[in-house]
Image 1: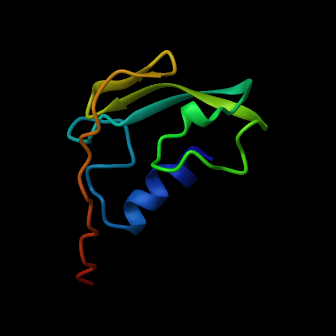
Image 2: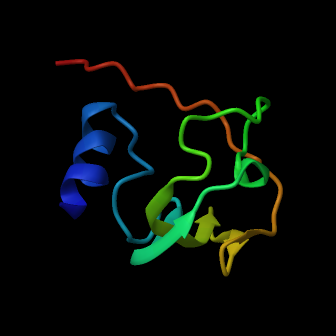
Length: 95
C-alpha cells in the first residue's frame, strides 16, 4: 500500500524529488493514527465554505504530524506552520 500512495504516483508524474525517504528527496511525511475516531466540526474544515455533508459525522483516521521539506506544519494534530507549497509539474517522458 505504501508504494501505491508514494513511489508509484511520483514515478507516474515524473516527480523525481518525491516518493521515497532517501538522501536528495523532499522530506514530506505524514503520520496518521489509523485507529483514531472523531466527529468532524465546521471549525476543522480547511476551506472557504463551512458547509460539508461530513460535518457531525464520525470520522476514522486522524492526521497527527506533517513535515513539509522536513519542517513541521502539523504537530499533534494542530496546524503549526504556514502553507508554503508549490505547483509541481510532471517532467515530460522523453522516451
